[in-house]
Amino acid sequence: MNVNADTVQKLFVAFRDDPETLETIEYALMAFESYHQAIYELEIKKRLYSGGAMDADEYRDLISRLDKTRTINHNALLTHVNVLNRIAAEVKLPPFYDGIVSEERPYRREVANAVLDYVQMIIVERM
Image (cartoon, rainbow, N blue to C red; front, side, top):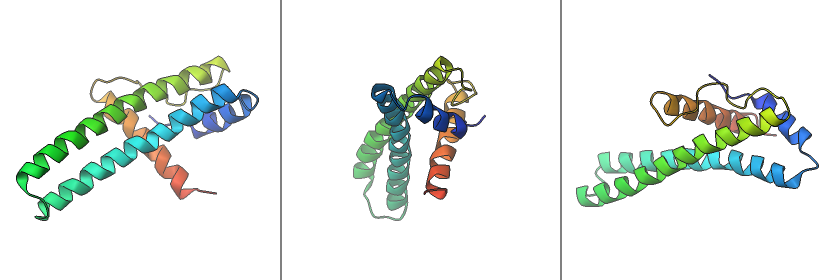
């Protein structure tokens, strides 16, 4: 399953005169980077620990907190994908994400991976 980048572009056009909906769309898209950042920070701290740069007690406390932040951002990502899908449906566009959006495994990871691929595409194809 993939994210439909064309739907995002068409949403910008369809709601160009509706600042409230545009703000909702932008907020959802920006939340995806928050999830990406939470993953990245967690993974960097794990690497610091494995390199001996952090003691075990500090590591346990920090990783627990960072993992909770990552989970919160992941759940927010799922909510925002649903929001984008609903907005797209309002104007009869294909869904932003055409797979199953669920907190259940393996779906939660599949959605997240598709969104992370979209974030990566935005970075690679930056204007």
